[in-house]
Image (cartoon, rainbow, N blue to C red; front, side, top):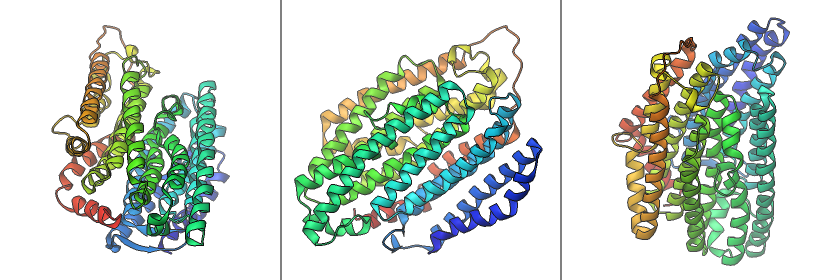
Amino acid sequence: MIVLNYVAAGIILAIVLLPPALRSKDTTARNSFLDIFTILHSASYLAISIYLLVSISAPVSSFNQYLFIDSLAIYEVLITSVIFLLASIYGHGYIKSLLDTRELKVEFLNLYYLCFNLLMVTIVYSFFANNLALFWILLELTTLFSAALIATLAARENIVASLKYVFIASTAMLFSVTGLIILFAITKQETGTGILNWSQLVQNAAVLPSSSFTLAFTFIFIGFAAKAGIVPFHTWLPQAHAKAPSVVSTILSGVLLNCGFYGILRLYIVASHSLSNHIISLILIIFGILSIAIAAFSLLPRSNIKKLIAFSSIENMGFMLIGTGIGTAAAVYWILFYILLHSLIKALLFSSAGILHRQYGSNYMPRMKNAFKLQPLASWGMILGSIAILGIPPSPVFLPKLFLLIELGKYSLPTLFVVLVLFLVVAGAFAFLLIQTLSRSSDEEISIYTAHWTMKLALIALFLLIIGAGIYLYTGLGDMLTNIVTGLGF
């Protein structure tokens, strides 16, 4: 299958670039080889994804028992490839600064690059997985590789955050195993063959018993919700995102959360063809509102800039979950656009926060003084990223938020009112804390941290992509999203 080209590209690059990197005893030279490999590896994934996007025009192109290609999978992989490429470019300068300050030990350098590249491979194939059991395995592997990336700084708090993430995510995924067993059993009872493939589950959803399928869905949802940062399975996320190196936080928020949400969306597509559609929609909307509420009031006492961004991720995943529960074609269309923008904006925010952290040696916002003078690009990245993620006009997020709220109003006016109030809390907390932080001034002489040009390039590229996504929506991107919605059966 054509999806195997992703593995082939990695193998070819590994054969060419890894032997000299591993033989080199010079840290700088080894870092350069590994860095070039990572950038080229992610660039090759982007090139293959663009080829798939151009060459496969049908909503559903091909599938077999274990791997398949459809427009939703290609869309997710395209987002993943872009974020990983920009993260690897940003990481070129960022990792060098960690090595210079000895925050990243030389002996952990190979582990960082190994897990970074393996995480990309695993995430990409999780989107192409047609089998739920295979998807579960790949999702668990993402936990392993991302936890290792969090712990690469080898600080005590990083190790604690990593272990907490592994414990919560893996425990939740055990519930998913139970759900998969129940789902396999009821499909075997009703169809004569146990089914765990997305494509076949959709075709047979109508014959599944409502109560049994709802039970299976609930168990599977727990594991996927933990990976997506949905309340109450979110407790790993703020600490993990805050303690991880900023380049890793970019991946966690911009890509990894998408994996869990992708599983929920795929599972809801099955549910939408079943007798359990109404009750499952209600479950998703309740958990979505709960996520927004907890995130909104958790933002108020924040003083750690990365935790502020992390709680914003929980709020946004909750809003997307509400849109999924609404389940109309229009809601799914705007959720897909929201996924793209959320990934790009969170990458911009965490990358900007990374530069501010290098400047002040801390994520503690009261320490950040003269930010616009010392780090103007990162400061503007935080301001513009915040405006964008809050959906303030004329940011590109305004349209998906507006139309999703319209769909929510059609579903339930009281629920719409609750969500609007919570959004006001989020906007107020976010705006107050950031304006208060970035407007602080001091007469104290502070030396300027010179961000590597690749770090600045990544920030500029992310900002341009966010603006471009808003403009492109009215041309080719809109057609692509329409094809995805059509292919999903809405």
